[in-house]
Length: 204
Image (cartoon, rainbow, N blue to C red; front, side, top):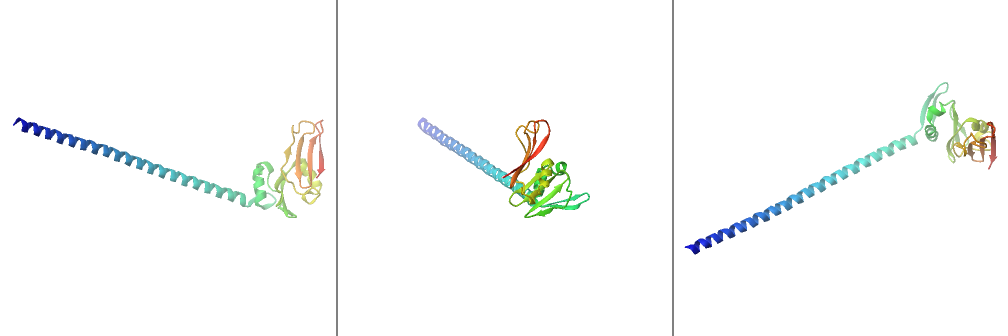
């Protein structure tokens, strides 16, 4: 009788051990499955976020490019007192904006004029000269006066090839002042050393 009880007790202990091991195994498997599920969900969420972020960036970039192209490629129309409606072509409109627009150059004072293959647009405080080979550039002040006196773009200097530059040291030092390059020469407006200025035209 004691032996039978001992056998039953042993069998029960073994059964409990197997059940416990199975439960532990199932528990570990469940944990692994849970971890795998969480990892998959995290990866999916990350991919979705990255995809959404990428699409948003692409959309913003496309919108920015479209706006930039529209600004750079389109003419601009202005209503000028005493002149009426003036259409600035794209290169002149862009240069006008870069130079400070109406706050710096003022409104147009005339309709655009064609000179050769280029265009001349006068404003209250300067003139923009534009041609396919030189681009659009502002000429103003005393250099503009000297340039116009020498025939402007139809004269010996041709169209400007760059905007006005200040020389080293600036206008407050001797031989300092402003200079503008043209197709066939240079006009400078420099301090003679006593506070007065004089122009110099240097042919190329």
